Image (cartoon, rainbow, N blue to C red; front, side, top):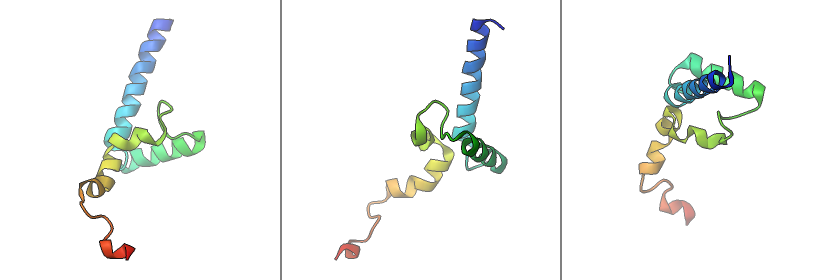
Length: 81
């Protein structure tokens, strides 16, 4: 495989990984477990050194955090008094 072929393969692999993370993490159990295992053993948390922000557009993140973003009151006012 020449340099151009390797570069194309890397781009395809990166795209497939990113799609898997965004669309399937937290939705498909075996995919979630695979990502958790991979990240635990490689001690990384993203595809391109973006850290946790890689998850901000993922199904998992949006599914768990949409109420917080759409809510006017997250913590009742009386909590602070």
